[in-house]
Amino acid sequence: DAGVTQSPTHLIKTRGQQVTLRCSPISGHKSVSWYQQVLGQGPQFIFQYYEKEERGRGNFPDRFSARQFPNYSSELNVNALLLGDSALYLCASSLSGAGTGELFFGEGSRLTVL
Amino acid sequence: DQQVKQNSPSLSVQEGRISILNCDYTNSMFDYFLWYKKYPAEGPTFLISISSIKDKNEDGRFTVFLNKSAKHLSLHIVPSQPGDSAVYFCAASGIGGSQGNLIFGKGTKLSVKP
Image (cartoon, rainbow over all chains, first blue to last red):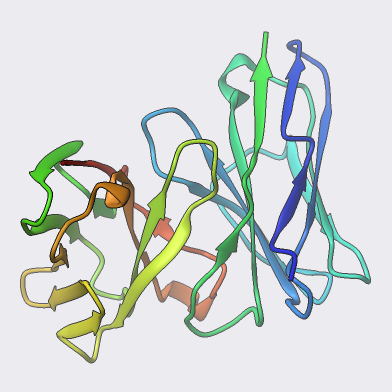
């Protein structure tokens, strides 16, 4: 069975550009979460979507947005890129959007902003 | 203001010995704790978890201990193996009951030497 898949795996952008990252959850999982991991830090929560609705949002500016599609895949968009947006962006899926339980992570999209 | 703290950036252990990774948290509302392992160029992989109603959970070579009064948890790996060499993240959840919103520590890099 396929795990969480993310694309692209690596990308380079320049300041001010926009980027879209994509995520396909594990089959049957209805919740998708996005995390940002900068070098030397742990993953930081950006968004959670469940059944196409936003269930949670971390402390990130409005330049960050996301959506979830009917097939439960998701996109993360970042506008007006800054150098500080350079990071590994991780997508994670889970069966439901509430309660406790493990998240299953993809390998991430490595974004470099020049 | 870190709510989950892993104060040891790195730990080196001899193969066959015990590895003890520590984690402290500040928010008493956390009710579920998880440990993730991360190899380079891979996403975090779930290792073991514990609910706040328990003080110990064991899975093979891995045991997690929770001391609620001290707001401290630890991961014990016995015996340690070279393949355990990775970055270990402690994470907590429970605020708002969202499964997708985990608060991560900065991680501890474990090196197990043959």
